Image (tube, rainbow, N blue to C red; front, side):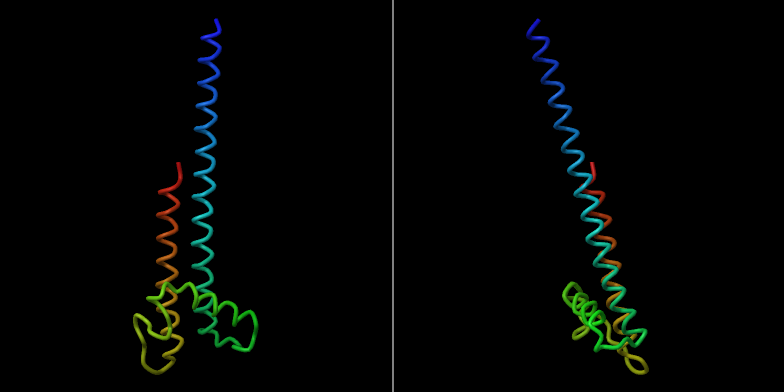
Length: 119
């Protein structure tokens, strides 16, 4: 009789561990997606700050542009962009193109990670 009770207890523990691992993976997958989505939104906001000719002396605009510069993946940097446009409005076009591509890359990577990690 005690063997039966031990077997039932072991099955319950295994099921509990499986559920815990599934919950952790689910939370981790959502966290990865939210991080990548947030970084994509920061890059989009920085690109729009160029397009809207935002006040560069504003602290919020500085913060968004600094964050975008930090998370532009190095390939989409505005100092050495993937594509540099010529006049007119070359700065705006360059920012929209390069930060836009970086934002799309973050969205693709985030969705890939989310599906890879999710149970």
